[in-house]
Image: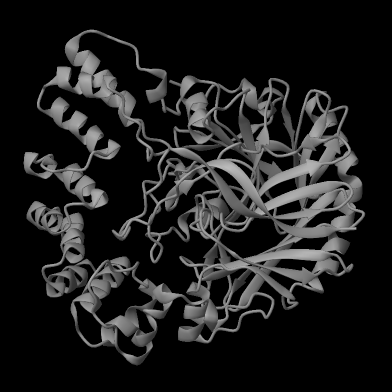
Length: 611
C-alpha cells in the first residue's frame, strides 16, 4: 500500500527574506565560460553557443536571506510504501529532500540538517541537499527557492501520484513533476514533462541535481569510459575515466565530470559506499547526460560545504546529476507547441564488485540495475497514460504567473497542469489592466518587468510606471538607447534613476536614487560598488555588504591597518558568490601592504581552485 500525506518538516532554518526590487538587467557572472570552445566538436559548440540567458527577468533576485537559524516548520509531502519513504518540499522548488530505504534504514540522499540559503543560483538563493530539479538555463533554476503547485493524481496502478507543476518564467516552460511510488516498488519514480506552449522554439535545459553523502571509500559508477572535465580553468577536455576520478574525496579541487554515455547502454549513475551499497538513479533515454561534481578537499571546498550546512559533521557530500544534454553549458531546442518527457528512478543498489577495475565495476553496476533499467520503458508507458490526468485534490498553491500568462496568450496547456485564474494574487492581478492598454501608476516598488509583454507596454497609456517598465523591456531586448530614453521619461523616481546609473555609470543618478530611498541596502551597495564616494557611506545601514565596501575603500585609500581591523572584527557575508573570494582577496591585500603575512582565517576561505 502506498500512502501520500502532508506533514510539517521542522528544521533549523534561516529566513529567506524578500526579493530584491532592483531588476537584474544582466545575468550574474557565469562561471561556466568555455575558453576552448573552438576546439570542441561542432554539435557541442552549437549547443553551447545557443540559448544563453540575458537576464533572469521577469524574476527578481532572492538575496534577502540571513544566517540566523530558527526552528521552522516547512511544508512537506511524504510518499511511502513498505519499502521506501520519500519527502518532497513544495515550497522550495519541489526538492526531493529525503529518500529512505526502510529495510536497511539508510538515507540514500545527502539530507541537509538545516535550511540555509547561499549565493549559488540564477536568482542568488540556493540550498544544498536532496534532489534539485533544474530547468530553463545553465545554473540552479529560478524556482529552486519558490513554491510549486501540488496536487494528488490517481496513478495508473491505483496508487496516488504527487504532482507538482509551475511556469518557469524565463523560458515560459510548464514544468511538471510526478512522484510515483507503486505499492511493491523499492524505487521511487519521478516523471518529468516540459511543455513549450508557445508558437516558437525555446531553449531547453534540464539537470536533476542529486546530493549524496560521501566518505573516503565512496565511489561513483556510470556506464562511460570517457568524460568531459570542467574545472575553474574554464576548459572542457575529453579524458579517459581512470579509477581515481570516480572517488569524490580523492580530488583536491572542485571539478565537474560530464560522462560520455556508452552506445547501447541505458542511462544510469550510482554512488556507493565501501560495501557497494548506495543510491542509483536511472532514466529513460531522453535524459542521456550524467555528471559528477565534487567540492574538493582543499580548505575552500570544505568551507563551502560548512557554509551550506552550518554545523556540518563528517566528510560532507558530492553530487551526481542527470541531464538532457552532455554538459551543463548546453541548451537544446524545444520546438513550438511540443512537450518532452522522461521517467527517472531513484532507489538503493548493491554492487559488491563496485571497487574493482573500472570496466568490471561499471559492468557489475549495469547488471545489478538490469531489472529497473529493463522495466523503465514499460513504467514510462504506464505513467504516460495519466500524464494529462486532471488532479483529483489540490494540495498546495504555487504562483499565479502561469494563470496570468494564459490570460495574455490563451496557450493550450495540459489539463493535468492547470493554471486557474483564481490562483492569481494581488501581484499578478496588478498586470491585468495592461491587457486593455492601461497600467495604473502607483506609489511604491515596481514589480519585476514582464519583458515578454513589451508590445503591450509600448501601446499602453503613458505614466511613470509604464515608462519605467518600457525601459526594462527595451533593455532586455537589446535596445539600450530606447531604454535610456524611457527611464528619463519616467522621471525623478529611484527605480528609473537606478537603472540609468546601472547602465551608464552615472553616479549622480545613483546618488539621487539613494537620496530618495536611503534605507534600501541593495541600492546603496550598487552605488558604492560603482563609486566609493564618502557621501554614500553616510547613514548607510549596518550590513555585511556595506562593511565589505568599507574594507575596499580603506584599501584604495592605502589605509591597510583600517582594512585589517574591519576584517579582523569579522564579516559574515551571507551572499558571497560561488567563484568569488573577496574576503580572502582583501585580507591578503591588507597583509601584503602591512608586511605582516598573517594567514587567512578559515572562515574567509571560499576559494574553489584548490587554494
